[in-house]
Image 1 (tube, rainbow, N blue to C red):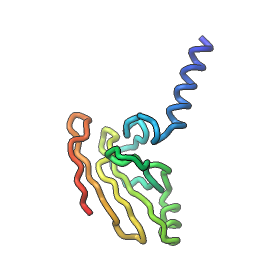
Image 2 (image 1 turned 45 degrees about the vertical axis):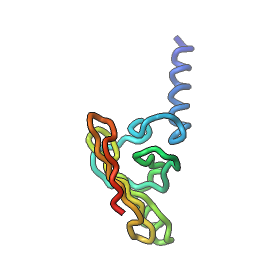
Image 3 (image 1 turned 180 degrees about the vertical axis):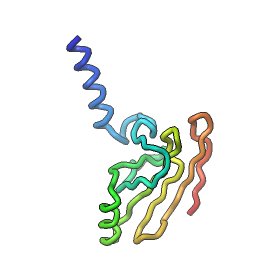
Length: 114
């Protein structure tokens, strides 16, 4: 029994340690209540869509980044925990925005707004 508990705990640690560089889907990496915005400092730099936000920020941390002229990201989620909108801000202006639609939980469409 103790070995089984150890193995389960090891799997959990590995899942959370690997973060965006693992093969986990976006809903396993980050799940939130519907709506937003949720703020992030960055995203996993790979070809997956939707973007995989990392390093969640508080509103106060975002204000500090804005004062220093740094970029930050906003994400919005649907009721299933999927990202529906991902926005990059720099100098308090939108640099790019993508919107995502899903069909039966699978990514259906990606629209680049800017």
